[in-house]
Image 1 (cartoon, rainbow, N blue to C red):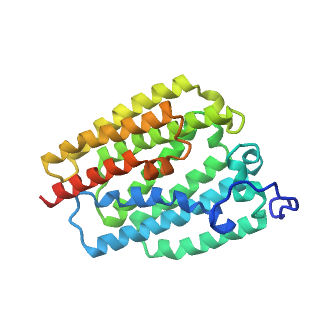
Image 2 (tube, rainbow, N blue to C red):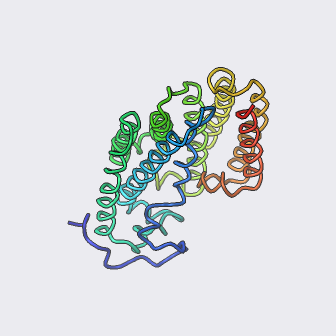
Image 3 (cartoon, helix red, strand yellow):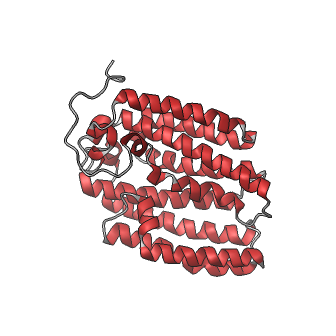
Length: 298
């Protein structure tokens, strides 16, 4: 019965966003993950409005699916979140949204997701459904297993990429899959490192299997693999001109800057915020995107 009961004694309110609490529970600040990953399938493609529209529908499907997953995770983690210095301010943990309301949101999101999937190509539907299954397993137990927890989260981004390619009717670029996987491991490991420094292993059981030194080694390894995978993607599969390899300095700078933020400045707790609000990242990304667009038009 406690799963559906409303909170009768909310915790003292901490910092909150300006969004209504139920909308905040959907974590719109994390939606850019879908906007950045799913449309990667358009890189180097001969674009037409039909393809763009199909990819946009799949992006919408992942926004709904990921929001549903966030609500489920917050219900499952409500007690642990209350002991975390930052996550205790989330709507459920702080008592600003009751569990009954959260369950209603899950049903609403599932109801909205169903017609979106019906509008999608089958090749774009299975990655969304598999994403939901994998995250259900993650919320149930897999998130407590060291190493497996970071690979499960990274797999969610690979599935987004498969969904985008499926929507566009194109074969998946293998080296881009590898690059997305290793890059996401960099971001997730950086987040784990930040969590380990902020709250120790008490909040997330999987953190008992990590140390700062071990995570630093993994960061270095995955960063190197990301650069190699990106260069091989450009050289063999992207459809870009050979000059696109000149964007390698942008890739290196992005990784160096992120590692600097994580290791030197002890940031990285919210990778999306780090990527979208850091001035160096934004300037470098703009130049990077401009170069890729120029080479695509050549």
